[in-house]
Image 1 (cartoon, rainbow, N blue to C red):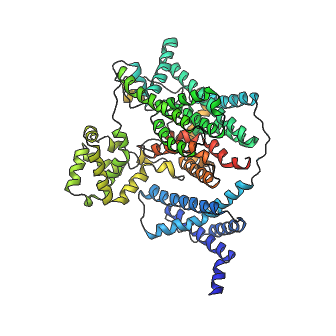
Image 2 (cartoon, rainbow, N blue to C red):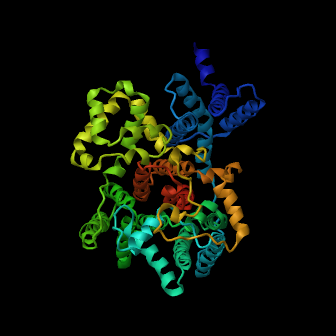
Image 3 (cartoon, rainbow, N blue to C red):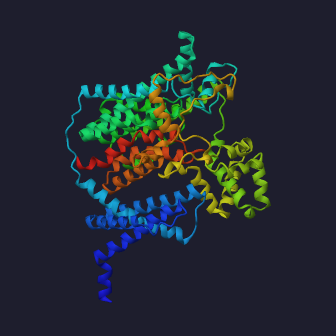
Length: 591
C-alpha cells in the first residue's frame, strides 16, 4: 500500500498521466467539429510530448496561484467544449462524455496557465522608452495617418443599417423622435450630414465630415491608451504593438469609420476606464478639481451615448464602497451625479423636445423570449394549458415562434411579437410565467441563453452564422432607398481602391479566419477570456484597487450578454481596451 501511495505521488507518473489526459481532451475537442477519428494520429504524440515537457518545467506555485490556474483552466475547458457543441450542433450534450471531455481538456490547459503565471512573475520588462510631449504628438500622427488611409479606402465611411433612421428622425420634422437610439449620437451625425448639404449641397461630404471628426476623436482615445501603456511599462515593444493595433488592426480601423453609435460610446468608455485607473492609482487625483468635473461629464456622456453606460456605472458603485480606501463617498458622488443628470435628460428634457419614450421591456425580454421560444419549439410536451394561455397573453403571434429554429442567435424575431402593453402592466406575472417554464426545462433555457450570446464568450466561433442573421461587423453600405424612400442615400466612393479591396477580402469575405494565431484577435471571445484572466491575476496578486475599473467593464459585459444578438460592435468598448488589460496583467513586475 505504501509503495502504491509513493507511486501515485511520483511526479513523473503524474506528469505522464496528466499529459495523456490532456492529449485526449484536445482530441475530443476537435472531434466535436469533425466526423473523423483523430485518435489514430501522429500529431497526438507530439501534443503529448509538448504537454509532458511543460508539466516538467512548471515551478511550484503558491496556493492562490494553483487555485487560480485550476479554476481558470476548468473555466476555459468548459467554454471550449460547450461552445463547440453549441456552435456546431446547436445544443449541449448533457452527458457524462461531455463532462469527461471538459476534465481531460483541463489537463491540457492547466500547465500552460501555470507556466504563464510563473512567467509573468519572472518577466523583466525593459525600460527603454520615456514619455515626452514629442512622443504624444508622434503617436497621434502615426495612428491618424494609418486611419486616414482607411478613411480614403472606405470614403465617405461605413453607412450602418441603423443610421438611416437616426438621421431621418432629426432632419425630418414629420418623423417622431424616439428613445430607441441615442439622441445624443443621432443629433451629432445628423448635424454633420446637414452641414455638408448646407455648405456643399452634398450629403456625401457631410457624411465624410462626420466620419473624419469621429476618427479624430478615436485617434485621441487610442493615443491616450498608448501613452498609458508607455507610462506604465516604459517598454518600446509594448508601445509599438499598441501603435500597430490601433493603426493596422482591420476590425478596429473599420469600426472607427462606422456610423454605429457604439464607436463614440467605446471612445467615451475607454476614457472613463483610464480615469478610473488613474483615480485608484493616484491618491492626489482629487487635488486637481478638473478631474472631479471631467469624470462626471465623461460618465454622463457615456450614459447618453448608450444606456449600457448607465448600467455599467451602477455596477461600479458597490465596488467603490468595498475597495476605495480614501475619499470613498466623494467618488460615489461623482458616479451618482451623472446618473441623476441622465434621469433628468431622459425625463423632463425628453418631454420638452417631445421624444417618444419607448418601453425598455422589449429589449429586456430578449433572453427570456429566446428561452420561452426554445421550450415552445423543442419541448412543447412540458407545457400545460396554463402555460399556453400565458404564451398567448404575452406574445401576439405564436406562429412567429417557428422563426426561432432558424434564428437561434438573435432575439429580434421573437421579442418583436412581445405584447409590450400587456407585459408592462403585468411584469410580475410575466416574470412568474418565465420562471415557471424555466423550472420545467432548465436545459433548453441554458442553451437558449448561451446560443444567443455565443459569439461574446466563445473564442473559436465560426462566422458567418446564419442563426444570427446580422454580419459579424458592419462593412457594407446601407441600401437606403430599399429600406425607406425618405432615407438619405450615401454611396461608397473609395479614394484608395487597392486598400479597399484588401479590407473587403479580410473583413467582408472573412479571410481573417485563415490566419493562424492572429485570427484569434478577431474573435470577441478572446477578449472575454483576457478580461476574466485579468480579474484572476488581480485576485491572486491582491490588487483590489483594480476591481473598480474592472467592475465597470463587467457591468458593460452584463448588458452585452443580455443583448438581442452578439455583434462585434457591442464588444468594441472592451476590444479597444485590450492594451490596458494587458498592462494590468504585466504591471506587477514594475511595482
